[in-house]
Image (tube, rainbow, N blue to C red; front, side, top):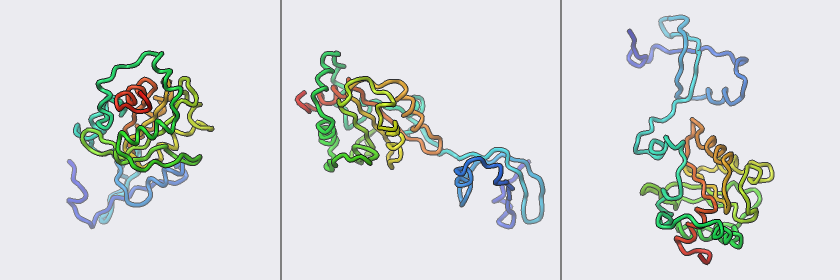
Length: 238
């Protein structure tokens, strides 16, 4: 037998007693403060005319009911990773085959700014900001089209400055470039490099994208896909 509290009326409240000394992180207290919706599993300890007392055992954040038509629902099986071929704004790459290793070497002579300018032209972004040391992303835009809709997007472009496989050590002086990228208010995060991207970088991007209370999409564009993109839209002399 069960009954919802809202069926009984506002005269009855559920009170859960939680001792702060059992909270090991400040974020726990922050998440439980104020008016929020959480899932709670606990034990009822007392029942009185005006309230029900309980001790919580498990408290968790409720995730939205993503449907198969949502961005998240459609990409859940791929751990929220999408590929350049799936992005409408880059759809011409679907007709371009992967280049050989010899052709990939062409990217050595194309600067990061040239790549940035090319991508902005492809997606129709008019704001071409100059890079500066404290930036969280190289491109932030709402002009990217995905699944027939515009989607807010933040990109980090590494260019050819270090023409070798990308590792976590390649991502900023303190290796924190991915962390800073995911502080942008975006739904899609893109990391571009002119060479191959090592699996530990993909794993880190996946970990940030799969934060259960803030799920986002991510895309890695390695050197081969960068070449395809520039070739498809006839940018940077390709």
